[in-house]
Image 1 (cartoon, helix red, strand yellow):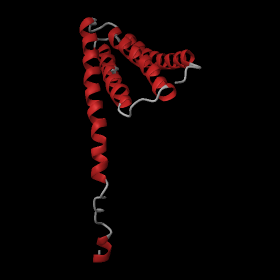
Image 2 (spheres, rainbow, N blue to C red):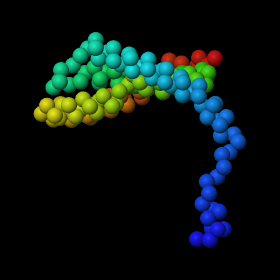
Image 3 (tube, helix red, strand yellow):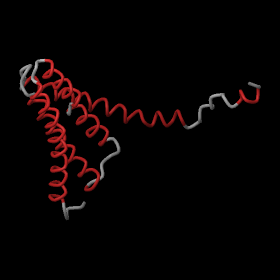
Image 4 (tube, rainbow, N blue to C red):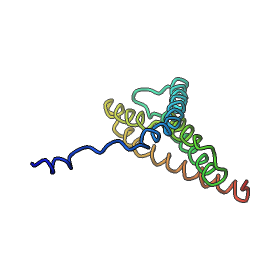
Length: 154
């Protein structure tokens, strides 16, 4: 390789606006983290309030995911179609709080736990029912919110 060919292998210098772009994202990262902590704490509180057995259908995880998805449906219709919100509301509440509250990672662990305890039928029921119910909840909640807010534009 000759010297002129090596020139093309250099990393580009840092663009002048790159640092300010990262600083502009700092508030978004902060509100997502705060909201995520609050949502995860609420989810954990639900698991303490309604503990499930090791070989039973994970009803608490199921209903947390369904309820969280329904709230996502309502929230996104309100802030995108009805009343625009501050730029940090969606990251805080939508991504942070509701993302931390809904728990598809725990859902996956619950399915694996059921399989490990020999409850394959229950695991398959959970595997199918949770995303189906969650998607149905977000769709129904969004549709109901649109219907309820029809004609009430600010």
